[in-house]
Image (cartoon, rainbow, N blue to C red):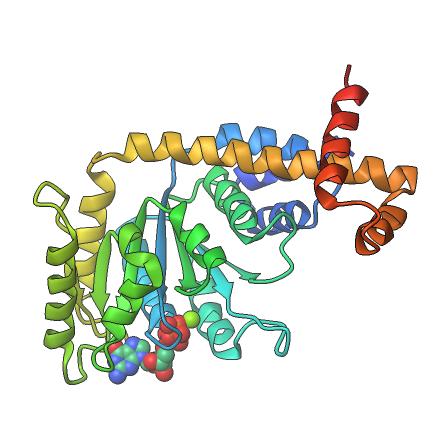
Length: 317
Ligand SMILES: Nc1nc2c(ncn2[C@@H]2O[C@H](COP(=O)(O)OP(=O)(O)O)[C@@H](O)[C@H]2O)c(=O)[nH]1
Ligand SMILES: [Mg+2]
């Protein structure tokens, strides 16, 4: 079975996009052997630059991602795109528009596009996105763009793992300020006022500038604010210049990587411990009974967890 994984990894290394797609699916589905495969893929990765593109629905993230991808490709970069689709229990999937737009980018040589559902990712969205990033990185993609709606902790966790985070705002309605309020400000590397063909772009840029001035220290790195018209591509060249400059500057990236690796280890540990303990209890068939006892106030969940941890330690003595 493991030979199978190794074959896929070899094919991916040789440039097969089909192998890349299959590796991602298998890891997403936690197919047997996925952990062993990730061990290898981790050691093959570490070269790609990861860029988060976030903002309110309709701000123009997909349009901008498309334009950024095209220009980066003409500049000689290979690109991976991860579209974290807004899905709901009602629609249960990607917005059709996104799929269509992304399909166009898909057909460009050197570009690999993958969409991910917001819900249902095994191990949680941010861990799942990290796996996909790592696999694309191992496949040799230079830059990985992650498009995600800038709402909700899950999405914020996803962009937190990026080397550069672009926050996309639009003129009017205080949208710029709204994005800032959503708690994204601390992780923004670049602010983009898209739809600059609309009235009020300068005002929105000024509002963002004011917020930044108010909340930052004079010693903080200056956060650029750029205007774009994603639909025509205006401002995209300048945006890419600023992005590449930021990616090349070493400013604090090392610390950031340490923090990220630490967080990754602990997140994996939490998942694995929980999975193990759960498995043991399911095996013993005690879980249903315990749940009933907790509801009936015969037992409390705190002691249950204590007991689970004790049995975990006892198991491994
Ligand atoms: N007027 C104008 N419309 C834009 C611009 N960028 C994107 N759009 C349009 O805004 C709508 C939403 O864009 P989309 O990229 O799907 O936004 P997303 O939800 O953030 O991914 C689409 O109809 C785009 O054509 C722009 O710069 N100016
Ligand atoms: Mg979109």
